[in-house]
Image (cartoon, rainbow, N blue to C red; front, side, top):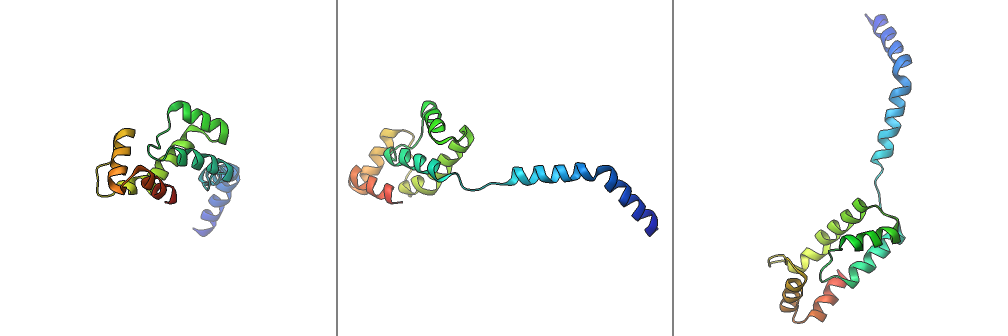
Length: 125
């Protein structure tokens, strides 16, 4: 029993070993996720800070950000989705999420007393 199992194991390793190693390396490469480059993040944060009242970039904005940062569309979209979840939505806690820039301005000014105060709070978060 053991000898046949060992022979089979060796035979399979010889036959498929290289393929298995190649697949393993490919999976490890694909799983590598991490922080975006610092310069790219800085550019995204600058855009965010300048438009924090309504941080929804247009398709043209995303293309420009892609050129500036070297990031692809998925990376840019995901960064904005995460940034809004972590920071922007908290500004409207206890309120309905705004569906336009004007709604956002009005809600922020009402909640924080003025749009200027709301912007200070938003930029600190």
